[in-house]
Image 1: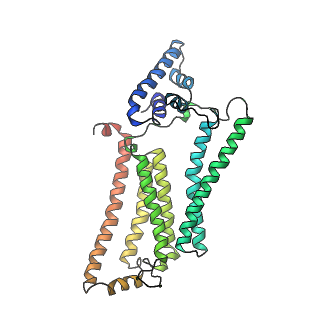
Image 2: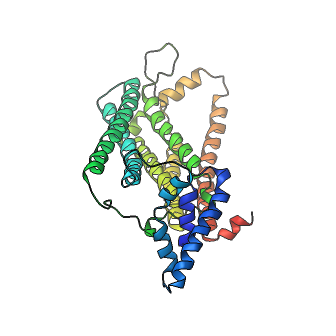
Image 3: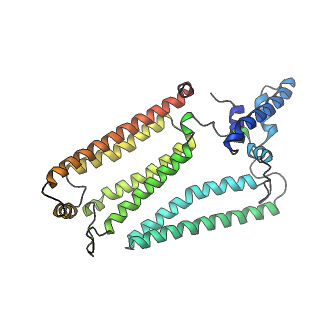
Length: 323
């Protein structure tokens, strides 16, 4: 179990370069210990919490150690502005970008127009969020007096990351990029001509799947992105491992079933491929089908096992420290 001191120390050192963290951690722990001693001498029943409250917001202390003044808006509101801006960018920009893409697709725009609109919309939303949020806080900082709107308390301290979160940011970026490319590919294949020099559109996936299954997989992909964000902020738990099972089953079972039924690929696409291959197409197709099905099942099973293993490591940190 982590203590308030552990969480406070982590909140301070996590913004420092990796090479400086051990020394900075010792200094911050010493500060907390000294403050706690003073409160223990006063017979305070909540000495640890009182000491941390006395030291104040960990990001302010981190900025002091890094000689990084918080002066863009003013120390009273800088951190509140920065936290709110990051939260808005993380939530609003992806939702707005996806909404623009869906709207352009429904309107019948070309693939290039859809991608261009999504990129332009993402930039525009980012700029507007940054500008208007900053303007609002500048006005607030110039007009407000006294204490800031939200006082910092120890309850706002982040949890110390579990052993599975050391490379969490890299995993989050990789997951979001891959899943976003999957969404783009689902739309792209509908408009990308297969035969070179042909103006005929030959989708890879069966166009009939647009009535339900392709939108289903697109919604499922968005849910996977949301799940990756939750994992980044909260870390693994048995509950999230259970959600991971549901997501894998929701993807693997329909995908395998559609493949076995011969419904997932566009028949015209399969015929076009057969015409451009040799006489061993049937054998190659049989081998390809086996590889696809085994891969889908193996990836789903491995992901489920990995999820429960990571949850177990979080609940039993000694397993990770022993490695």
